[in-house]
Length: 512
Image (cartoon, rainbow, N blue to C red; front, side):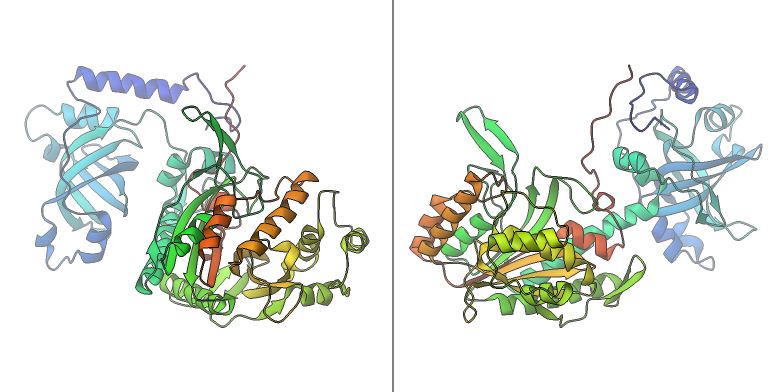
């Protein structure tokens, strides 16, 4: 395997030998990369699920294609394992079936000497059980479809159990294509993530929601507190930002007359990377007119209960060494009450300086750019969040923490906002959306003051969004759900890199 930090330019001995085999195949007149379509009439999973030895006629003329994963030479006959996108099956290859005439080159030379593990072939034959009870395909002809020039990492198996799977994260994340070949469980994990997204779509569509697309390149990076990526548009000669959220555009669509819109949004934040953060990630956001955050809590727990049960057949799933139950309803705890419970400190009436003293008391790092809202957020994150394992709504945030949220209908100084915490991590963030354009402009101006203090995550003033609100936005509930973090929970993965096909990494450097 390549050094994980350096891309090798020199060929290994195995790679050199495979290139020599490639040349020999071409000398024999065999195209190692044919252009013609290869007709497939079944898949390995279908064979395993439907083959009945009492009625074998349905599988007497199968045509499969896949990758050679093992080869065992028995002289005039050979065994191999073929893997397609649905599973593996044993191949039985006999010389005189492959080469019924005098010329045995196709078996003696091509099959036995010039094919390698990793090569992609097509086979035609019939399905049967061997004397040892192994479901197999008796191959009557084969076609080379793609010669593999790089050997696959070796994964050892015993009695069908993988006990030496590749665990090097550098390899798994950089060479996901090879990782997926040798670890079918990883392929299934990513397929489950796709099913998760589709189940969410079905839930929303059946309730009348409309899926939409909004711009990735934006003149103002709005809708969240985050540092953006900046790029330049040559034709317009302006700087643009990769979106940090799609919230403000989706609310413009509510102004425009839609009652319920949603988007699976690819977002970009120029911030740190760790086991729950990648600079490129997926958020589901949806906005619903004439609803509030109480309705949104009920809808969110119904959605998650439905998705988990659809994927796993139960609402209780393992996450690490814990069991998480997604069955609704979920507890609701005010953020200031949570802070009081886990710190013993009542902070509701504290100003910025007093909050800094609390942070100092608990050794929570702060800096001069942090206003009251960020200080409260830091206290909750450091002292409280990890305690919430089962799904819990943390509700009723201070107004300083939530510049896009409607003020609480009965609690001065607070807003109608919740975050959903599961297994100690934020999974969703939702509001009764602020639709008062005068109040919204004032909140943006307060954010501008934080930006002037050096807060790189403070929000810009989006005057066009203010103009949209001035036309009138109905009372609206909105939410953002971290799809990658949800995928981590539902597939029991400890790192966001394990639920992204191609997580961001430093480029490999060329050898000196």
